[in-house]
Amino acid sequence: MSTRPEPHEVAAAFAGLLRSPRFSAVLATTGVGIAALSYPLIRLTGWAGYLSALGGLVALMVVVLMARRAELDRELPPLSLLVFLGWAAISVLWSEYQWVTLGGVAYLVSYAFVGVFIAYTRDTIQIVRSWGDVLRVVLGASLAIEIFSGILIDAPIPFLSVQGNIAALGPISGVLQTRNQLGLLALVGAVSFATELRTRSVRPLVGVLSLIGAAACIGLTRSAIVIGTAGVVLVAAAVLYGIRRVRPDRRQTWQFVILGVAVAVIIVGWIFRSPIVKAFNAEGALDYRLHLWQKIVALLPGNTIEGWGWTGRWHPDVAPYLALTVDGNRPASSALNAFLDVWFQLGIIGLVIFVGMLGLAFTRSWLLAGRRRSVIYAWPALVLIALLLVSLAESSILVEFGWLTFVVCCVTASRELSWRSALRTPPAPEPLESEQTS
Image 1 (cartoon, rainbow, N blue to C red):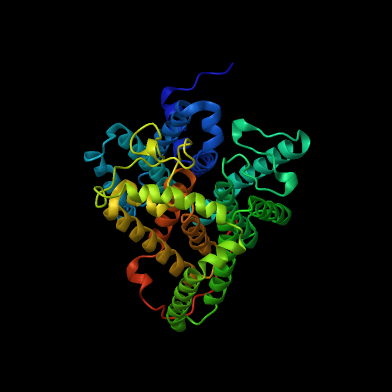
Image 2 (cartoon, rainbow, N blue to C red):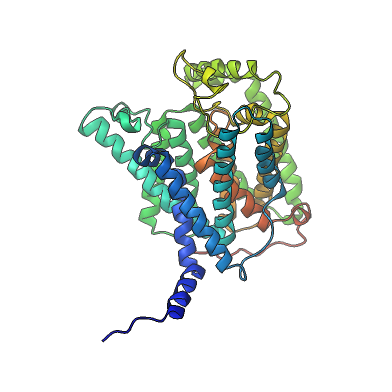
């Protein structure tokens, strides 16, 4: 005859579950999944269901951090991240839509907290595994629903904004509403899958098929910004491969050489921007964005310094967003440029903070990737390159998956490399680190 456990035994078992690394891994993967699948989840459950899931996840993460407080680092997240969050919160004071701003700030802080939790409770290879596991499902589901819509039933699925164009080789958006959002997740997925392969974290067949799926999604988006970013990420990966094999006393010199080349390429790209746009057949997408950007710039005077107030996602039912339509009647959901979006919402002060935060995070990540011989340290730098470049044509880095991924990269780089050590020339060659598996 079984006996009922004593209350203290139940409490001890529950405390053990909260302190379990496996439970933290489940929470981390759940957080990435909620962020990556925000669009279909909102369509299926509504905002009430989605926010309830996010709130429940945050509450569980708070309890876990309290249970594991003795074993986790107590250092603060990067100051630049805290300053950006603080300025977004302060914008409620002058916002003309204060309830929207309060909700937008709470949403921003919630995902920032999820990112900090993941960065503090998981090491880099475990973070890569969480992203890889989630993105395999997301990209697989996207290809599956596009095949179902475009080949099996040969009809669009308006509920998920699936047009069924895969038979014509795109453009496709999968379960992510827009092709650029699908492309961004495919880019991050490709970096994650390649890292998993190099570290032998997954079986070779799984890794290769995952990379093929990510490449297929990137190509089938037929998005100029996504395909161009993929090329830049490949070049950056090759550059990092070379830097890690340069003698430590010469790395800093080569870093400046690479910086000079990158600046020169940017200048040349700007000079020849028109031929480049025509080569990618992106005139229509650019005209669409320019029309919206002109309307946004026209609303900046009077709020240039402090902005209109933070919203994150645009709310087309409040002014001035209800006036920002792209085709005369359809409201825009974002500025389609993260930098202009931040300027509009948080003013020039917020934009300076935002650019500084991105610059510090990327510099740390790049230096970390160049100093550490293990391939896992290249993941934050390459992912940030994808996020930053796609931010020129989308605002996805400000919400959900893009924001969560940025926060994780930012906090991870900050914990692994302080500025004092970042600016110091390594005194001796580093031994090749053994690749971790999980």
